[in-house]
Length: 155
Image (cartoon, rainbow, N blue to C red; front, side, top):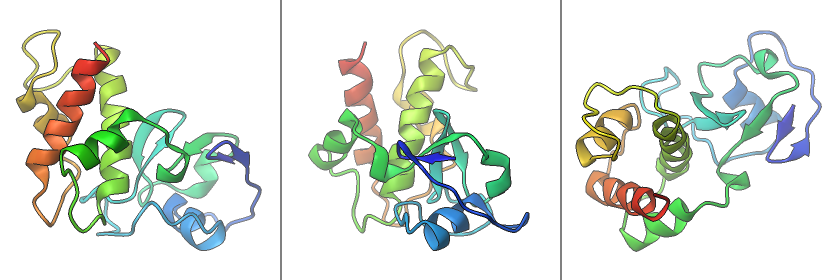
């Protein structure tokens, strides 16, 4: 697979999660092991540009694929998270940013949302689309503000 633009070759047992392969075998520590059950989003990475919970993905499924973690991201959302105080302890931030990048791409591609009512991205829609990413510190307002700011800039 390619990880953050660089070829990564490793042999793993069929049961090794993508998260464990990234963290324990490749030393990529941006994705975090929060719940290890796909409920918190701290492990979110982009696989060929699509957001996934790496704790639920088997590493062998991603042979030949492009994996992007926070270490490989250069996106206006990073600056916006700082500007809008969209992080506190920082544990969830890498997953939040990767998820937001994927979410913005989904919205741009016209993927449906339970609360979408027009072409413009609303705060309610951001909250719904980001609902799989938890922040134990409660920085949700700053996270939503950062995403809305970037969404408006890219329109």
